[in-house]
Length: 249
Image (tube, rainbow, N blue to C red; front, side):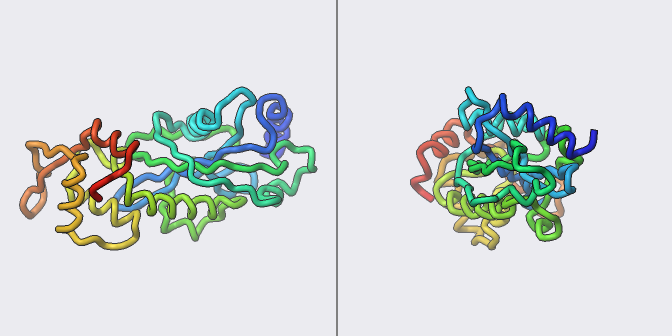
């Protein structure tokens, strides 16, 4: 079955399963080798790259739909998702499906709920669904080199802007860093997301005042310089800060 036939088959099934005109598009950010990356699928049809998005079942909550779609299309589960914007430009997906007639379910006008998530790529066992050739972490610096379908470049850019705004009042790192990390590794994560360097002393002082870290009786071994202390997140305080915001940042 070729890629167009797959879409035709999916279209017939979708009309019974899913709500018309509503979809979800999760933007999953990962931090790997000091780079911020985004999870993307390369489709068999047209060979373009898309976010791992999908449709909402008729008896399903939208948040549950976003988590289900991410699991089915990329193998990502147990992820914290947060809605950040609605995307509904007219004919936002029409060009992608121009080879099909207007009866195709996927070609209808869809309003999409954008979600962003933070996930450690080391914890991911990625899968490839039947409509895709690849499921990969793509560095943000490489996005200009690939062809993104529909308005997915705009969705990613908006998600990154939202992440940069929310970093000032919500903690990050729990889903992006290993269980044990140094303060310099945490600072590098913040700098990568913000796209700028931060003053080391100011950052260390502020992050410690948030009381979301636990200092461990361990050091990072193997470097040429003094072994830095290792930290982990205080899970209880981190969750409180995530729900209530940061008061001392």
